[in-house]
Image 1 (cartoon, rainbow over the protein chains, first blue to last red):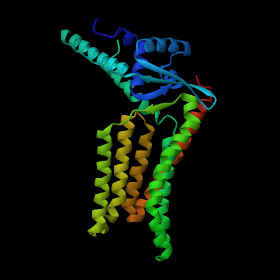
Image 2 (cartoon, rainbow over the protein chains, first blue to last red; image 1 turned 180 degrees about the vertical axis):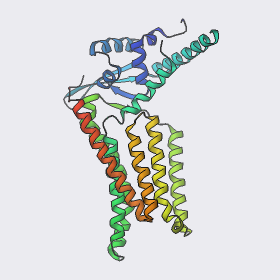
Image 3 (cartoon, rainbow over the protein chains, first blue to last red; image 1 turned 120 degrees about the vertical axis):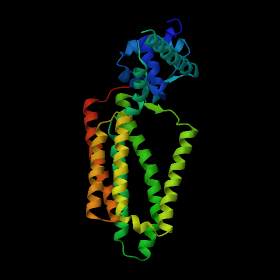
Length: 98
Length: 208
């Protein structure tokens, strides 16, 4: 387990990063619907991912409505790709041992 | 622990989101009705200056309808979908995918032009509509599997039924126009029904 990125490995954060990896950018509402996380829970995980430099958060407006745009940074995409590789390797090793 | 299958599922969820509201099918259906209808109207105009003018403007109408449909889908999604279940911007497909798409379009156009120039178009007159129907049906099946969108199977069935009808009735080139009109009508109805269901399921809410 030492190979796995601890920031991403947490299930909710893995879900967030995995979802953002498939898009160029998304807003908070989409991420909340797709992840099924509550507003507060999602905000706290996003703050951790932003702190790690994996997610970029842009607060803007669409007309008069506040809009929070989220993007995976280059570091975040690389970290997710690394996580997938490490996970596949671990699962292959575990399968080989059985 | 998350499995690679679960991670792959996460990758496909943005693609599935594109079809969540029925808007793409609705607009695609309207464009197909326009295309099929425009060919039928053009065929009904007696030869002369009016027909010449109509067919001169025709390519521009086809191109503009394609551009307008992309604009309309975006505007409808901004109006209905993004405020309800959120906004996403898809990743750039990359130069390889763009080049392959352009190549397929150019090769298809060249193939059609070659058929017309060499006079072999008449030979495929009765097989074109059934052939296109079968190709569209297969495309819907592939889209249904790849995007996990079972409702596309209904459109695949409609396309196949229309292909069979065009083959049985031997309608020639007119069959192709009717195929697009009827398939467009089916797609529009399905899109409208799915949009109505989506709007009922997701009442408007404020952005975060």
